[in-house]
Amino acid sequence: MLKKMLVMVAAAAIAVFCLSGCKKSPSEAKPEPNEAALKTIAEYEAEAKQEIKKENMGAKLEEIKKELAKEPNAK
Image 1 (tube, rainbow, N blue to C red):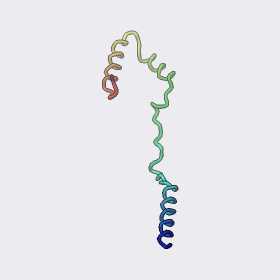
Image 2 (cartoon, rainbow, N blue to C red):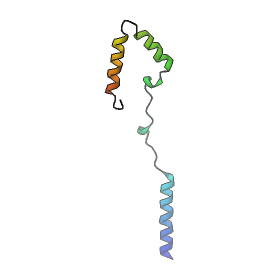
Image 3 (cartoon, helix red, strand yellow):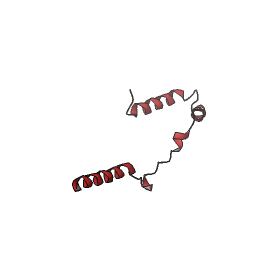
Image 4 (tube, rainbow, N blue to C red):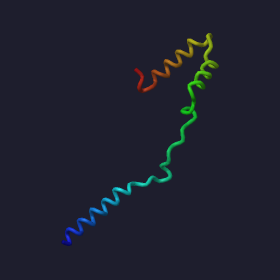
């Protein structure tokens, strides 16, 4: 009888701990998104139109190819 009671109390305690879960500390708050992640497609297009002209089109294309080659998922 005492053994059953101890097992039930232990099981209840374990259940309470499992159901309560872990609480995140304030230092584990979500990181703030950086500005680059918030740009829209229109903003990227406007930047590209300002930076890329007919005269420097080839050089910019080579720069982009080099950047893509450095990326780990490049094919």
